[in-house]
Structures are given as C-alpha cells and as structure tokens.
Image (cartoon, helix red, strand yellow):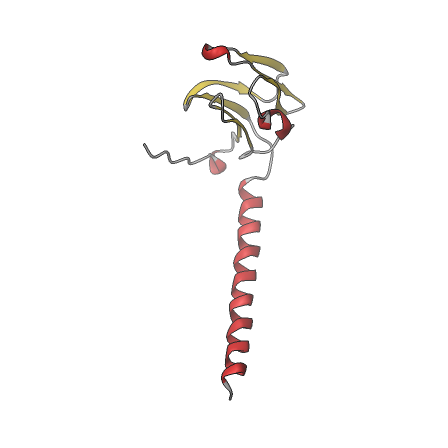
Length: 130
C-alpha cells in the first residue's frame, strides 16, 4: 500500500465521521426546537423584564432610560420587534419568530426576546458566566 492510498482511506473515514456528527446535530436541534412555544421572556440588561403568554395578542413598549425605544408585538403564537431606534435595526430585521429557542436580540439596547417552551422536558437550560 502506498502512502497516498492510506491517506485517501483516512480522508474518507474522517469525512464520514464528520457527516454523521452533522446529521446528529441537526436532528438533536430539531428535537429541542420543535413544537410550539408557551411564553415569551423579555430580558433588558440581562435581567428578566417580564414574561408574556404567546396565546394572547399584545403590544409591549420598552421605552426606558437612555432614550431607548423598542416595540414588541406578540401575535399568531409568535413574536416580532416592530420598532427600534437603534442604529442597525438588526432586531427589527430578524422578523417574526415562533419556535422555542429562537430569539430576537437588540445589542445596542441590551434587549433579548426569546420564546420558551412550557414543556418541562424541553425547558431552556441557560448557563450564564459572570
């Protein structure tokens, strides 16, 4: 056997292992992010601002210190940020989200809006380092 043939076999094996790991990661992600969310959690400056049910349509205005303006609209069992006066508007362009684990983040205003499942087996397990 030549060195070139051995490298080809090892490359194929490595490629197969990587493909298997990617497929597993996709299926695990789909399992944990499947189903309907139960509530929306809004965090401002890393502190829980409030929790809202997804099954009740409502508009939330977060207009606090430093001239921050963010408007959140909960409807159709999902949520979107409709207005923000931050410079880049990434949070507004994120659009409508409706699955557990999805989030809308406004970095300039330090706001995080995320959908959380009510299913106890799929509860978010966040770890925050300080």
